[in-house]
Each structure stands twice: as C-alpha cells, then as structure tokens.
Image (cartoon, rainbow, N blue to C red; front, side, top):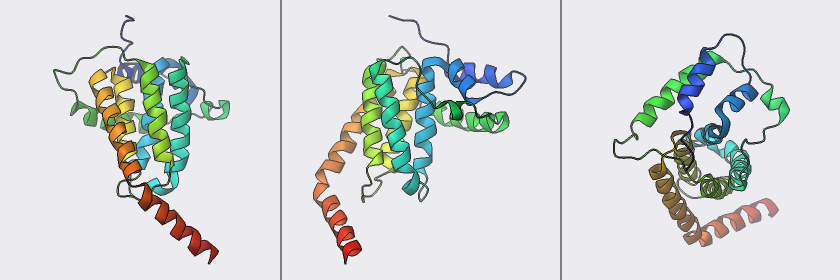
Length: 200
C-alpha cells in the first residue's frame, strides 16, 4: 500500500506563503494527484448557489466528466490548457477561500473516520458519472445542487484521503441516479412542453 501523500492544505499553505507570484499551473504541480480534489471542488462549489448554477452547471459538469475520466484512467496529473495554467493566482483571495473551506471540512472530520489512500480509479468513475448528472439540465427540485454537493464530498474525500467520505459520496451518487431515473417521465414532459413552446 502506498503511503498517504502530504496533506493538501499543508502543501497549499506552504506554497501560498512563499515569496513571489504563483500561477495556477505551479499550484497544480505542487498539489500533485491531490489536484484532482481541488479542481473538483473548484468546479462543483459554484453550482450550490441558487441562480448561479443555471448557467454554470453544464460547463462545470462537462469539465468534471473530463476530470473524472482522467482520474479513472490513472493519469497522475489532470490535463489543464496551458493558457489557463499560466494565469497568476491572487494569493490573498485563495488564502481566504482556503480558510473558509477548512472550517466547513472540520465539521466532517470525525475522530473515528479512517484516513488512508483511496482507490482513485473508482472515485474517478463516481466523479465522471456525477459530473454527467450535473451537466444534464434536469427540471427537478435540487436538480443541480444535489450532484454538486455529492461532487464536493468526493472532492473533499480526495483531498483528505478519507474512504468513508468517498463511500458516502458513492452511495449518494446512486441515490441521485435513481432520483433522476424515477422522474424520467416528468423530465420528458418538461422538455416536450419547452419544445412545443419554441415551435409554436
């Protein structure tokens, strides 16, 4: 069994405390394989905001499908376009967001929860499938927020190397899939109604 990697937040704090400018690419390189969890959170969190999620869900979902597929394939580092990697990072804002995120994660750090390396391949599959659920425009209550919350939990599980969180996320993913599948007739009727409105 491989040793657990250095805690993500410890790595990120050290990088943000260093002098000089830092780019997104340098951040991803320093975080290593834990970058997957960071990027999952980055893409999923905005979809928890009502109203904002309507435009971001399809874009974020597609990006998460790509991230999950790379992780499931076993790619050590996620591919991110060079132009995006070259963007400088505002250290102050990142530190503030990091502090708020750590406060939220502390609520889920149960003393009994074991911390050990995860099977990244099956977590990658869960992320890709849940990203697909997020990308599909579903006219249901919590249609975007539910998969986004599951993705945040899976991303946090990768960051913290917490199998318990990953299993909870996987179970929630199955529940989300059943929820969407059981409402297929309602979804179909909504799309047909929208199509008739456009044509008529």
